[in-house]
Length: 112
Length: 116
Image (tube, rainbow over all chains, first blue to last red; front, top):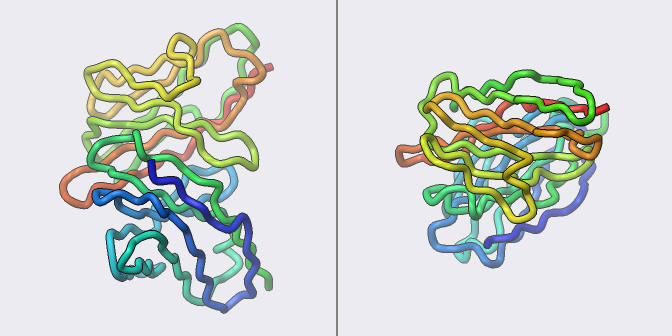
């Protein structure tokens, strides 16, 4: 079971780049790393997913070192609307839910 | 990504009654759906895995007779909270597992249950 550890909270000013790191020391060979964003009273929204090295899409980048024991979500030039809780989810999504447990998440507050 | 819809978004029920929450995969045939519960200011807790055409798999500590899950079609899973109590008041969220190489999980909007 690949448990994850994230900082509980982070603050950032508008326009800055934000990097949120997730530790997953027990990640298994078949595990993927997925990041979600959650606003209050809404379901989590998929941001990005990766297995190794670097993945980039229109909203974020995901950096995964060679040992895969951690990952970093990078949000470029955050705005006030990026204030949310960000979850790192690690698991073998091929096999179902047994490994798909959420950690505490990181509450990001963007300051004007 | 997959579009997942939950209904109702908010429901209030009396203690002792049952309430059903629906989860629909609108653009994807989901053989596997998941149900989570989230209390205020806390993370999501996995309750059960819903498999189309078979019995759901419940996580440890989740009463299967209290939280009835039915996944009768590839686009619909339901969660019924039976004999609801105030402590069952929570935010319930379903999700679907997509397949085909880029497996990932997409979530519904969530359903707020308040038991009075």
